[in-house]
Image (cartoon, rainbow, N blue to C red; front, side, top):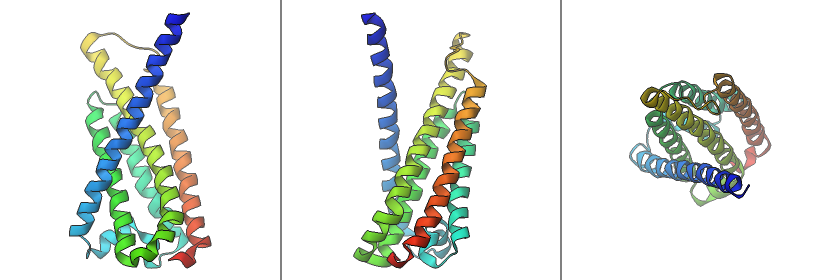
Length: 197
């Protein structure tokens, strides 16, 4: 019994470590994104893509921007997880998502200065946290699935606990539903707190 609880504890520790490392990777992406934003601060197209709320766009456009960018991320993550080398794409994806966040926050501060702090705290931070959690969960699934496929190709052994295509698809469907809810909430928050901008 002790052995079972010890093994279970080790598995939980590995899961938590993996989640933490992916969060750190995303933070690296945020730093990279901030550096990119500094060199592209006059790029109006980039500004409108990553920070549509700043430029008088409609609620529908804000909803679409959040939804489309997150859906592209989820779809690429899904197909990456079906590859034996999807881990590489997963890490690239989480860095890219972090970079997008870094660019968005930088443009808020560049446009509004210190007066952007209330808007960032109310409009950006909740969305960033929610989208980041979804991104990390999606990439964690990429890592698990890709590792399982690679393990099977190398050893010929299959771990039935993780190698379940239906469960894999179900997890991504749930993530898509969550992204849809986040997109609605983001547009509503921008409508309610439009005065902060």
